[in-house]
Image (tube, rainbow, N blue to C red):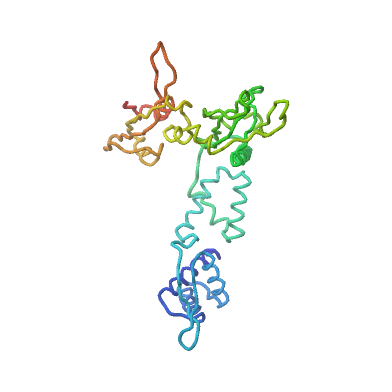
Length: 345
């Protein structure tokens, strides 16, 4: 058992003993050692128990000592936190699975750092953190993962400062001045949500929300946007983040979007409850996967399952004066399941 796990067990023992017994420091050490020996672990010193009590206090437990029998100090718990901020034995068992889930990103520097930290700071072994061959994650992968993550982190810093950015998008000479509002990760890709800067209106941001695929940013490079006017050339462009976030209707638009599909003009989106019928192998797949927060089961039998998603129906355009409302992402969703999924409305 690693030192981390032993320490966790000891802290729980100390809490239990203090709650249920009147014990001074020497007695507390003896009682802890009785349990450790019973669990085939090594006994510890009074100094170790002193350090453990300091750890518990740092975690929010108000442990005090009061004079008692024979003028000795006995421990009491005045107040305590709801949960000890450490992993339980069962939670520790999930670590290899978590490592397995991120193993597809094992070339990322941050992932390697995390693994090294778990081993160096908490004494986990490589074997303890390796779920192979019992658990393997297979997933489509994207190119330039680390570059994309670094760029995403850079964009987030601009978002926090309420600072506009400049980049070339998809192809050369397609320049964008953008007030960035949020980054979303969906279906294996990073997306930037923001509004364009109006160069003809004193560089104020527009209110219409736009989505940009971060991997389509040329050279994966963004720089601070600057004003090009003669009297203020080179001045960085800033915006009121909270105000623009509200004016862009980002939260409303994305709440009912399927992935990142929406119309920037709010009244060109309307709520619709879509229902889908799944059969064969798709039944269990759908039961165990949440495609949208609104997802709910309408009917289930041995032969099929019907689910409902509350999503935007989007007005794409008008044809001969007639409004055309639909959601292309819904059609793509249905197509993923072939003849095992039927759109009911």
